[in-house]
Structures are given as structure tokens and as C-alpha cells.
Length: 69
Image (spheres, rainbow, N blue to C red):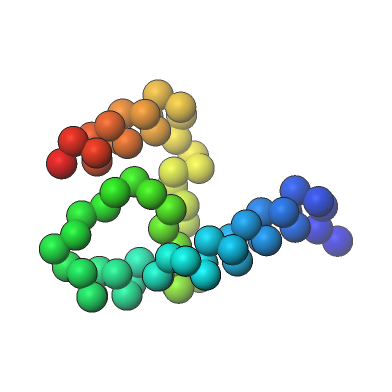
């Protein structure tokens, strides 16, 4: 049985997906837009979120780089 944190994350995911298009659709519909560093989700179940495995310093560096484009 999932714990409370897992249930909360699942609810948050469903909430955000109501407002954000899947990345596959965004790339097809808006090819000129670059990544903003904001919330993204993929329809494909086999995508691994590498951002979860990064250190805080790496995340800050990546976000700063994306926002300077």
C-alpha cells in the first residue's frame, strides 16, 4: 500500500497535468520554444526524470543556464 507522501505526489501530478501539455505535444506544436525549466511531463511511461538525481548545485546551474537563453 502506498504511503501518504506517494499519494500526495500522485495528486500533485494529476493537478499539474490538467494545466500543462505533454512534452511530446509541446515539441510538435511549438518547435520554436525552448525549455523554460518549468514543470514538464511526458506521456511516455519510460522517461526517467534525471533532475531528481542531480545535486542542488547542479540544479541551480542548469536552471540558470536555461533561463539565460
